[in-house]
Image 1 (cartoon, rainbow, N blue to C red):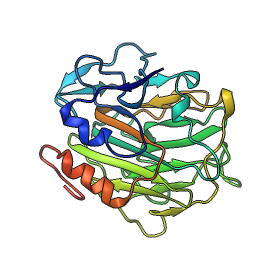
Image 2: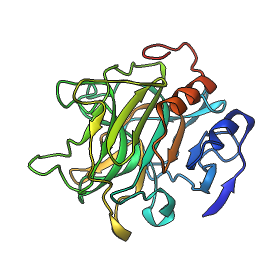
Image 3: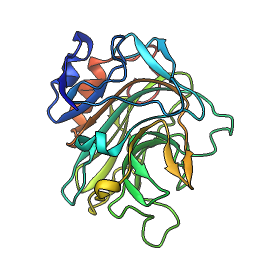
Image 4: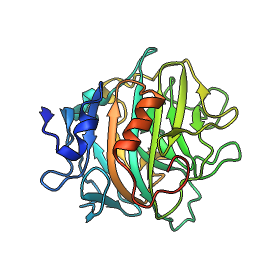
Length: 266
């Protein structure tokens, strides 16, 4: 682990936000190395993920295809291991979502520490959880138990926004957890949904210990294999160990405007 990596002018405002742990802007020289408090390098276990021109935080983005993902082994990213009753987290991502071959009939994982197979769930930003008559929205998953929600087949402790995330358009998606509730944001605005966003949850974040989940981007381990793929471009990713305020998230959105914005807050 290399502490602190130099920021480019385009993302300097993000690096200055308190409690930033890692920021991936996919800039040209070392696109998979994070800036911020920790310099963590994303690994490509499924082979090189294409880097394409056009992004939000730099001139480049990752183009994640079906069955591709990125990861950092748990032992290599201790700074991303938020856990405990008082733990907080924010995950921000800039995505250009694309259709999947299964017609998007499963969840789409953006990034987090989330291993369902071994009951090592902690936190993860998702799209399209498809619970409670929802589809395509921004979803923030938190687990204080690691396994399924007691009495349920799956973990159902999740904030679910109201606004569908479109295909083929840049969208700024975010989740926060402050130890009391999970919140989903879409294009800089809190995306309220009655009974689902915010989602009250006071159980904290599960402590997976030394053998807990790896950090994964674009998929999670579930049902004995990697899946719940996200397909599309990722133009930036940031993780904080603090729940950013609605005002902070709105300001970040204003500082990094989307091309041809659509939807909530665009």
